[in-house]
Amino acid sequence: MSEAVKPPQDLVAEKFVDERPPSLVRQAFWLRRTQIGAVLALMLISVALVGPFLAPFGSTEYVDLPNTLSVPGTIFGTDYFGQDVLSRFLFGGRTILILAVLATSIGITFGTTLGLTAAYLRGRADEVIMRALDVILSFPQVLLSLVVISMFGPSNVLIIFTVGLSTTPRIARIIRGAAIGVVERDFISAAEALGESRKRVVFAEVLPNVTSSLLVEMNLRLTYSVGLIASLSFLGFTPEPNAANWGLMIQENRVALTQQPWGVILPTAALALMTIGTGLIGDGFSRVSAGIDRGGKGE
Amino acid sequence: MKASIFRFVLKRIALGLLTLFIVSLLIFAVTQALPSDPAEAMLGREATPETLEALRADFGLDKPIVVQYGNWLFGILSGDLGTSYATSIPVSEYIGPRVGASFFLLLIAAIGSIPLSIVVGANAALHRDRKFDTASSLISLILAAMPEFVVGTILTIVFSTTIWQLLPAVTYLEVGAPPWSDLQGLTLPVLTLLLAVTPYVARVMRAAMVEVLESDYVEMARLKGMDERTVLWRHAMPNAVGPAFQVIALNLAYLAGGVIIVERLFNFPGIGSALADAVRSRDLPVIQFLALIIAGVYILTNLLADIGTVLVTPRLRTRLK
Image (cartoon, rainbow over all chains, first blue to last red):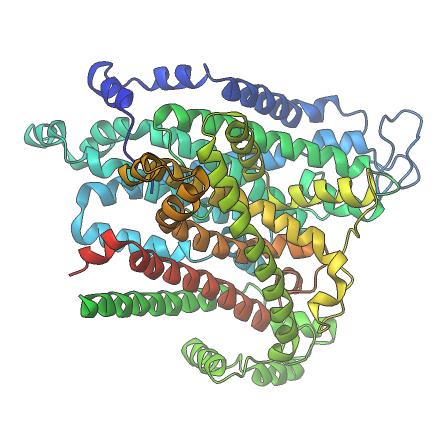
């Protein structure tokens, strides 16, 4: 479905404007939705990164009686464990964001390399690579992470690795699809005739021609990785049992939702706005690059 | 012609079985890479070398890995799923009633999401670039970006605790009780799953409809003076459903993963919450079996999607030789 017919202006752009990636980004930011998305994403990323320095209390500091709304010195009161809700909130985004960025980078690196290699080599190598990746694809992403975590415990490295691994085949499919048309073009044969190494042909000749797909995919996968990592924390799989983490915060405070709603509302709003922000940016990119109508989280 | 379809279906089924076999190997391999052994974890401090030995022999943990894998696989094929480490009851007894409950949850979500996304997608295509289209595309985008438990939590805040108190925030369902005995409690989990899946199918449905609505035969039907409704539902729809078929199936498969989170959020006693519990207590036989079922459902739906797409799309059907 992703091999939809490209709109004509895109073909024109490819032929005459020499395909410069920055222009794609600039074009995307002409769209209102990309602008809103960027504002949201930047806002939440700053909360996640700068928040810990602004927190009035420590991330696990006991402040007052649990689930109290009006506590002097706090804005949103205390949570299920007597900790300051605002401070927990300000601390809670950093780990999720950093893990998601690292996991996405792993997925992008391996996915792009495998997808490009499969598209370039074709034939048997292509078949073997894609079939092997299909096996990983037959696990829903949450399930794959859970199975691995169940055996080795929820360490940060493991979470990054499994989320990155479950992202890899999804990226590889998209990149292979985008690259398969590129490898047949004349400049590739020209590069081969000039004696460029395979590695150089793949990364210096093919890769620059799939950047728009890569950019769209990067955003999409970052959005889902934030969601997936937050979901794993929500299920209680964080390295430390009482970590300040938006996903875990929702889980911990949801029992007292009627008494102390802020412990749930703040992290929920933060996760919602962050994923909506990156989602909107991704949609802006995809509209500009080809107007792809994407189907299915699984693909 | 007929034979070629038959051959395609057989080949696809064989590939599906092969994938399932490799998946089972993988699940077994990963779950065998234990840093600590379950016998030790179960006995805790009371472990003596003798009791450990006895318990390992009980679970068959003292046999070589290949034998253990063979026993496990043949056990599953013959209906003997082993005993849960955490609860000491047979896995089939522990999982059985939960499979039914989860299946019911999935079924309702699936049945609801298909017509909903078709109606939304078709209407968006019909009113292309107008208010309904823009609004539905934006809402879809927002829903698709958020993780399910965030959508579910927002629904809980809005409908059961902070804003209105209309619906229960959790399902009160005994394990083994018929899932329809708490319909009120079922509303929010079903709604969450519905909102998680509908955006994707609606988007593909819209794209397929846009393409079909611009085709010559739709133009022809309009020129014949048919009213727009007949054109849409009788002429355009049957041709647009084909491409959406694959996505519908893929998203049903996706639901199989989504239940893990949603069940936990609403305390729904299904396989998802059982898996989360089993992961926490390292209940090996339960994890292995549940991972296999969920991956199996995933593979099966993909298989049906591939076969279904070829069968409903004339262009693809004739290409098989």
